[in-house]
Length: 122
Length: 326
Image (cartoon, rainbow over all chains, first blue to last red):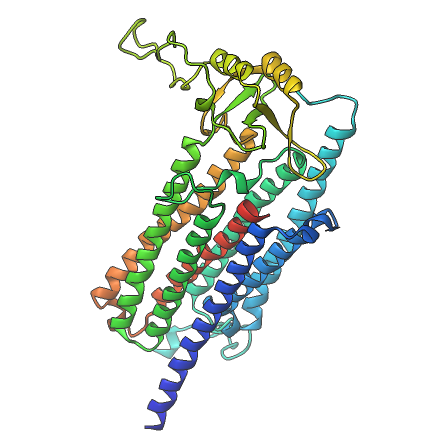
């Protein structure tokens, strides 16, 4: 009887967690879309490291969503630390490295296009 | 029996085999490592997209102006609502998937069946939505003129609102017909012609004093530059080379070809993942129906396909941000 009760409890707490995460993901998505439509002026006018605040907000909210999908839906929170690190650290390190290098290079080429004496305006 | 076996003397020790340091089955581990490699592939694509955006940051098309359609709402400007809806559909199918996995942990076959069916339905609706999105994108909206240098000129009225080509093109009757294989020279054919000739556009533009040319260069406010009437006429007449309506891999009316290339490639690759995800889900669903996992006393296969399905959702979250929002 006791065992039965505890199983029931586990089921409901697991499903509760799922709906809780769904609520978070929905709210974050709604906020993103609303910001994308309104485009608050102060968020576009001010920039931090080549990106304006609005884009930083989008990126951070996306990473929040990615965290909840991976941890709650893909059960990363129940895996061992070794498995978690093997997957997460590898991808995070390689992706940040790749993106940093490519964006710096892209920005540099843009500078050459706009500042060099050859004009690309046909 | 014992004498035929070679003993290493390491049984029960750390390196003696039989350990599961990650406490996960072989199949689940391999699914995780596949997901890791696939995640790196997608980041490669998105990083390449970011590279091109930074490279052409002064003339990249504005996504809000490109994706403005919603099914059954003709002529209504609805930027992003449709992709937001698609995102919800995919997130919700992820929820039903994780509910199926949870039901599998408790060996409740009927619940697994229900939730997996809902997940498959969500996946199909998403792929269908993406097909509609592609169709709209390929068909195009207002039409534009391409210059000799490969740039795009769009048309706006005095208030800066976009104007479609058909609203001002001078209607001449002597339009050249598309050449098909069965007429004229045998087996000589050409791709479909635009609705207007460049001459009709140039003449129609000259007769309409209201109209201005909009180039893709951003001004200080990050908006596209609208040329003065005089500059518009000069630009169109000197450099206008042909008409673009809609988009393919070589030309598109929204801006530079790279924009459409990345759109087709990244959303297409993601759509292919959703499609194959649906196929795998259907296979596992059939296995559930014929009691394969009841006999096995474990629904771990549902969990593995669930991992893949959540990953597809995860990728979409990033594609949504970088293609439609940023």
